[in-house]
Length: 438
Image 1 (tube, rainbow, N blue to C red):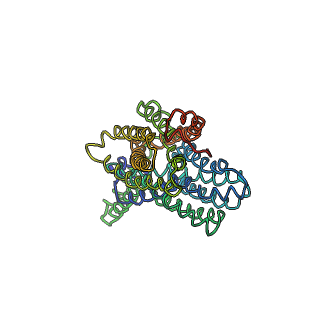
Image 2 (image 1 turned 90 degrees about the horizontal axis):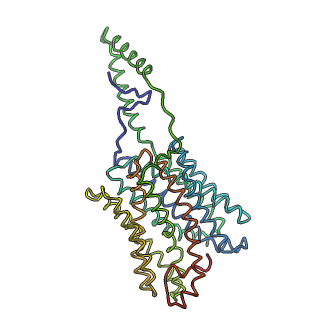
């Protein structure tokens, strides 16, 4: 009496996040997916010189490969949300892993830059997008109390993979050429399928337990105890028929929930993230060339990015641990606001960095603020909209951020035209000395 019927999939209550168990495997998969999604478009840049020679194109032409990857990662957010709501996270991630791998494998056989845009750019970018968003949704499903820490650890995949994929890409380029490197990198992206396979729906384990309980109950009912057995069976059958008769038709699930735009907190979050992303990726892009412009040797200039990555590796998990504290968790939105303010002030202060020591200090503080933003951004979004609407919210947010990703770096390049004027005025700053090649 009152037992849930596992055959009909009825659950007595929403499944509670375990905050551990299989969730740690899901966290590992999310760590790998995040690493590939954010680091891969940047790591591909090690092949650009060889591509320029083979296809007789300029730097800006090859740079579009990374730009298209990032645009697909952000711009296909609503498509990913619809697919996740329709088919679930695991099937979408498996398809995404196959697309990402196929894109790089096909790119190794291309004969012109346009084909590279379609394969390495569009196809691989779409595949990574179909992996990235569902992995974050699954992470939020498995973690509640420890979710800030889980988000921080998963976000650490970005700097870890960036520091690993770039040297690996250089080694592959030297030994196998860019075609062989693309082929091997495509094979590495098949690991996304493995990560997708471990994204087991949380209610599956609950249904298995309920199935075992149902089997035990039926076994007891089948014991030879006379008329009571027949009565038990008839009672069970009658209960099932009654449940089927009383069962209400299921409502169709929304493929994309636009009701989140009625949430004032979501609107504020979206506007803030759009403004933040406009300048968030500018310093890493322009830093090395700015350092060279002020006379820093090439090797030391390249090491500046390593400093940011090293600090970022520790900043993200540490920030996640702080955000998970009992007295901080209710105010995590304010911590995120502080991280955005900290990041902006760090960029402003970079205008005073006119030597290598100043740039190193800037990299340390930028790495901390950048890591804080990366660790908290999705935690705050889920706290605002809730886990039920998170799949739709993150898709729409990523779509809006895609415009900022495309506008930000090119807008910073426009300031290069102001450089002669600012030099006459004696003004020096990171954002006013931009990459000549952008």
